[in-house]
Image (tube, each protein chain N blue to C red):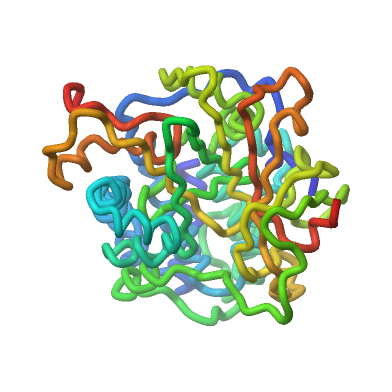
Amino acid sequence: MAARVRALETILTQKGLIDPAAIDAIVETYETKVGPRNGARVVAKAWSDASFADWLRTDATAAIASLGYTGRQGEHMEAVFNTPDTHNLVVCTLCSCYPWSVLGLPPVWYKAPAYRSRAVIDPRGVLAEFGVTLPADTRVRVWDSTAELRYLVVPERPAGTEDLDEERLADLVTRDSMIGTGLARSPEAA
Amino acid sequence: MNGPQDLGGQMGFGPVAPETDEPLFHAGWERRALGVTLAAGAMGAWTIDESRHARESLHPADYYASTYYEIWTKALERLLVRHGFVDEDELAQGRALRPGATPKRVLKAADVAAVLARGGPCDRAVEGPPRFAPGDRVRTRNIHLSGHTRLPRYVRGHVGTVEAVRGGFVFPDSNAHGGGENPQPVYTVVFAGRDLWGEDADPTLTVSVDAWESYLEPA
């Protein structure tokens, strides 16, 4: 595959259709600028600031943009909040739709058939493979991203975090907790 | 299309394999595949819907044997040939042999940040009020199109409840095939797990999809 991609890049560059420096810039964007730390800051602010949480609930695209996170695969955002009664899980059964602007590029497992096939029929079995066991009476809500809306899960704020500022709260927000395949870390584990 | 991409509820793929501290890319070529795919898309010759259709049109055996960056790369080759930018013999030889189609634009490094930050919003104004409202019971149509569609098989023919009206969006079924944007309202429709998967399903489970209006009829 390396040779095939190199051939493609060579042909397109020779024809003036792509600029290799633009490819470097795209890769650098997702390696250094756009990743799950963005989403973690959104969640930490929602935990800390009730009015921001309300804004996030009613107009996630604008609330997230106010922190500077916009753009490709984050044009139309929805935030879904976990509660003691309901756990949210996000999947794209049809391809690999994922909120790039807040989580960066999706992990391999998110794009692979095992997750995409089972998240909608056996979400608790999937969660167990991530080490997450929910109470039997917790409702599980799966969001299949079949259109252009991109979903960000706001995990529950862990206990014992009342004194933490947003930066330290963001350290507890894992990428998986914003997909729904994990929970936010407790301060003792962080 | 009822293609290999439509995975909801399929079985046999084994456990999910999360990696601890997985790298963003697993090989150097994956970086270039990402960049080449995005840069080529920025020429503006095809829509995101056409590119999704190109990926799901891979032969199922090829699709399931490929990683996602491999799927992207193989589909990109098809798109470039289809739109006259590259010929098969050039792909085989790995070098340009002749000029091809002229793109609308070429993405320059200096513009990458702005282009990525702008993205490609797909919301569009639609005429008239939406047909359905939150709380309405709707049935997804039992349709099996040979072209691109975003209604997964596992919800077709099932009754669910409209939870939210999301506004108008480009209709992928036509846009993927050069048929225009034809925007329609999109709804979040939620289904009970037992309605989709039978009595043995998790009683706490609900699943939603985002469905264009023409996928739905009153229940």
